[in-house]
Image (cartoon, rainbow, N blue to C red; front, side, top):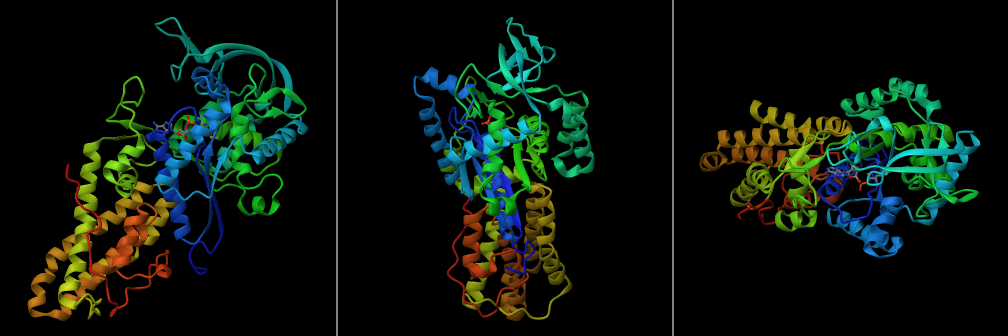
Length: 514
Ligand code: ME8
């Protein structure tokens, strides 16, 4: 693995940390699956990956939910954080740490970041009065709110009800960072992806930044402000700091120096302002290096409709896995939705992907190839003879997949990586139909062996490169091809070994029958 592309270089990626005020939903599952596929690809490609995820337990919403349920806030946080962690395990997420912002080392990291911002002169005490959305834990200027038909004051962009708050709080001098942020977006064009989000952030910052209220005194569920324990930090200050805690800030210098700055923060499109405006400003103030990239995925909708408890269309991700299986669900979301855009899901769409893409395109090709190797060659990988132009073209195409998939995954275009793999499978299915190895077997066994060898090679390469998306199924296929564990990394150039005995083939992607 030392000679592989990543050559053991560190790569640090994170997901957003969810509010555990309720059960996880499909939107959360989608974020975890996609971040996990990116993490797994980097590992496959030889990087020393650190993948952080977890829960964001503080804030007014958590405290209010706990009060409404009549349980202590810490109990609600623990109970639901466990559910988020179990979901990730069920999804096959390969995280290295599941952080909860109640963890002891996180308090230490948050205090340290605060002190550094304060030492810089960017924190001051003042009176805050304005509108607050508890659901999104967001402050709004009056001009960003309106009165709805029901006579309630709501945030103009989300329609969520806001409440008037007036209290003495600490402020962060965000206004001082407007020019520095604009320079950042200019100098580091990759800082925000996709482009539509970058443009959104730039126009928000150009519109002018006001100082940000960063502490609260009307409730106590949070990290106390150093030296002023009657204040707790605004939940987003400590939440964002989790990315530093996760790599040992400030005490474990070795881990921190190895993995910080983060290579990639994966988040949903609704929280770009926090990650692309507040977060880099906090870090600049504290004198900490900035992350290299923030990528915002889109929102998932149930048959095009927003998922909500009142509509009753919230699907438990565990039920989808029970019904369709883990790898098909992972494949579906990553192939069906253009990563970075909104997407929709439905049982019909999932079934159609399972039957068309997995069962027909990939499963049948693997099964036909392997069973013919069984039938005509006693399950021993045939040695290829002289290659025709058609053979060479197909193998060249399969050999180029690693570079193609790498480029797409490095741009977070997961769907395009999968599209490249599947269009090669389609090409291979056309090849096998044209070559008709089942007919050739009657007249020319050498040529049959060459055709099956070429097909088996494509199946092997696609299986190696599908591991980040479908770890279990891809590995089953590699088992059937007798590809050793030491040949399942990105060094796909090692061809199948003629003469190797294969196990008895069994279908990996059954059709979904209702
Ligand atoms: O925002 N489709 O937590 P959260 C896709 N605690 N993604 C969705 C989604 C949907 N329908 N609904 C939510 C928070 N998400 C903060 C984050 S990070 C320092 C703190 C995504 O539980 C959402 O965009 O509301 C976010 O990335 C993640 O789920 C957690 O959302």
